[in-house]
Length: 114
Length: 238
Ligand code: SF4
Ligand code: SF4
Ligand code: FES
Image 1 (cartoon, rainbow over the protein chains, first blue to last red):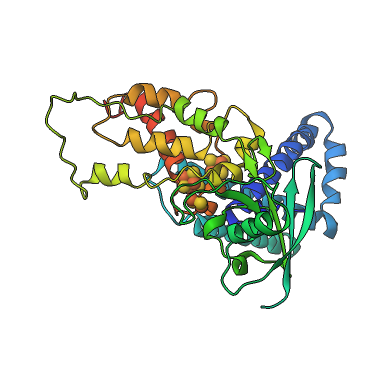
Image 2 (tube, rainbow over the protein chains, first blue to last red):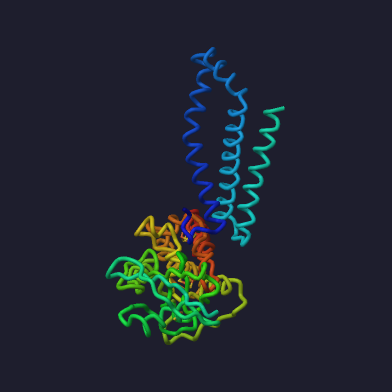
């Protein structure tokens, strides 16, 4: 359970940033391995890519794109917080980053299923 | 309200919460509840307070898992289905029951160079302070701290790293970095940005969310991070 003292928006922004960061760190080696198949095993790569036609794989990709976008936009918020003059609108920025990530991942999903 | 409040209070002797029934009042602070228990149920209960009006910063405790200044926290604001859980502040050693040892907290103020270093002597004229000058406003923004350690108890970076100076000490350092009368700019920036310094902060903003005086230590720490970088590039104050 979330401890009471953590129950505020910017802590959830921190949690999302941390979780997305860890998931992306686990995903990237797999991603590069699959890309490398193009050179080492093109037939294997084709077999793997056919998997991406599966709807569950598309949903998983949607999740991945959401995390990637959330990490990128949330990271921009943190860089702005640390490098630009202070703004009191951090909660608004954090929510905007999540909304932006959702919009990006939804448009990715829609173009993937059409 | 006629029903008794059911209050769990941390007892250090048994290392557990102890239940008390406390008569509910229309207007009642958490400190009133603790004082009632000590006066009427168990005189051995230890806790700390002094001013009872939010000035001295000595009465902070964890109330239902959140750090609060208890003398100015009304029961009705934090009551959860007639229950209260009152414990000692997080991130500090417990002396007894609800009283914590504040030494590590204050030691860190000294470590962060929280002491003003005058550039003048008693023989110089007094420096005029112009309240609405931009540099004075920057220094004043972080100044109303009552040393209650509520922010320190809210901070997960303090729980994760015992060396971390924490929001209050860094907030003080930031105030002095902005004070043009202070003569220890370089040393203070160094103290505030070392191994236990501002760069440990994860910008979660728990300090700002809980500071009862509505200060913004999170912004002060962001300011210190920026200032240390500026200074590194040679664009610092002096
Ligand atoms: S913003 Fe920094 S200092 Fe404040 S609670 Fe979070 S980690 Fe601690
Ligand atoms: S900054 Fe706020 S919460 Fe922290 S010690 Fe000062 S008054 Fe208390
Ligand atoms: S008793 Fe002084 S601040 Fe609460």
